[in-house]
Amino acid sequence: MASPVLRLEKVCKSYNIGQPSEVEVLHDIDLILERDDFLALMGPSGSGKSTLLNIIGLLDRPTSGRLFINGQDTAALSDAELTHLRGHTIGFVFQYHNLISAFSARENVEMPLLVDRTFLSPAITARASALLARVGLERVMNNLAMNLSGGQQQRAAVARALAMSPDLVLADEPTGNLDTKSADSVFELLREVNRDSHTTFLIVTHNVDLARRCDRIVEVVDGRIEA
Image (tube, rainbow, N blue to C red; front, top):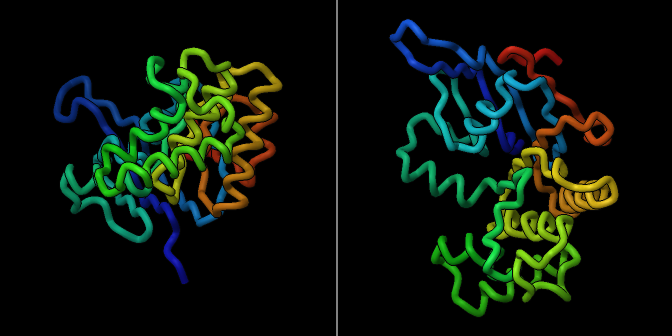
């Protein structure tokens, strides 16, 4: 039986350890994401969602507990090994698209492939073009990011997140800056990728209607999983 894409066991996170201002932000987090999961992560501001997302995204380390990616215990990995694992296993979509405005949509999608340095130039261009066609941007792939609509920019950001064929995509309020129609369109795109590519999604959202369209909802309150 295949290992879960993500498994957290009793993960805790504290800041200012050993100081009078020490605070524990996450408390004994247990969470499993299987391949094909499409999960919404909800919780009020200050609940620990961002800290949890940073730990899952290998951008920060837990104070205690264990985190497994595809069965691999990340505790023993060096920073360089974590960077490599993150680059090849996890894709990120943010509330603000974070595209380079002076680059074309295609050039933005090419960036993770160029950084990885394992793709030849023709393969990079072909991969980026195919991904942009997949998200409905074939006709505007050579347009500068600054000249795309908000919905198009977020679609380009989704294509960039998929550049390395990640097993897990972390989407932090991916529709938060979009109008209702564009938000629905981007959400359906994520759903389509989930179904067609068996990519696991963890979506942070405050939108209850969108969350209810996910397979599962996990709620974080005061650094603990409540539901």
